[in-house]
Image (cartoon, rainbow, N blue to C red; front, side, top):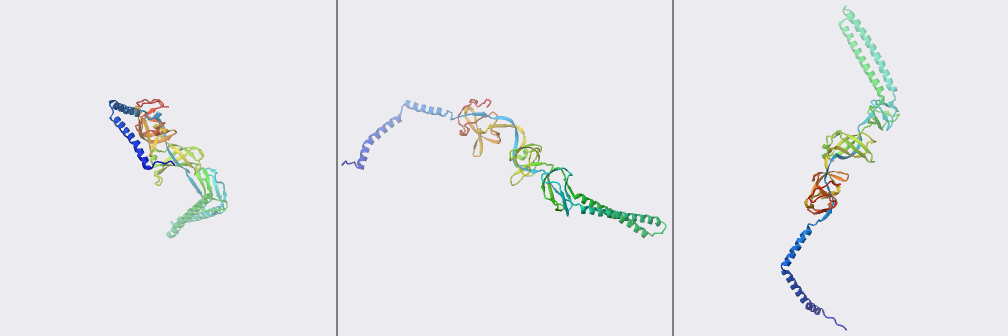
Length: 392
């Protein structure tokens, strides 16, 4: 049976063969460490070669110059569409039965058009009664006037005492007062009869109806509601920081939830800001289109025109919530600059600060750059000194 060496014997055999190899390696390492002049030169050459390789471009990018254009600036906003004015139509007299309702929801009406008629039998009877009272008062007045004339004619002869003459004069004044009272009551009855017919106070469209034939009308209770002059407005909620840019008369483009586009004009800007949302209301008169109260809409309010700086969206890198671009400088070295965005215009971003017109920014590959990187430009539009031809 074959016998294998023990563990201790195997360790002694390993030491016997490994020790000479370790010594030889140590001698070789020592000799290399001493080196000669040629070796030192070689090391320096290697270092120089490393520096040259470090200067090689880290990334190939494309670039474009920052352009300046005249832009129409706008303020975005959202809000709802409301009636310009809602008119509540009610009767000025109460206690009478509604005889006829001549309009319904959606009816377009003209100023002075009859909307509701109430039963006027009692009203007409009241007018007749007041007319009779008026005639009676006029007759009493005539008798009092005649008695006063006769009394004044005989008073000079002493046939009528001064007391009787004063009484006649008082009766004449009282009769005249009764005539005025009767006339006022007659005018009131006639007005009540006229108010028994409800008419439209202005042009518009009926948007609500709360009255039916046979119902007993109550004075001041809403019968109908009207959208005055068919005017509607967009009440846009604008952030308080943008309110100073908006003026009455500026145009607005409004888009409803169904994609319809409406045109409008700013009528007024609210003098206060809502504390819970930090927004102010801008009232925009809608001048065209089919807009209905209650609809939600978003839009843009034109806030003037002016020059603006534009860079491609793909050139902007966002880090920790801040926006940056990489500007190409001398020797194709890029510099990271923080910018302030003023708005998005299609595939371009308007820049408020951070760059100037003519600066050349990295586009393709910008997301992989670091400040101070040396790059190669693939579009051949930028020289090593950082000047640019017209980008296309």
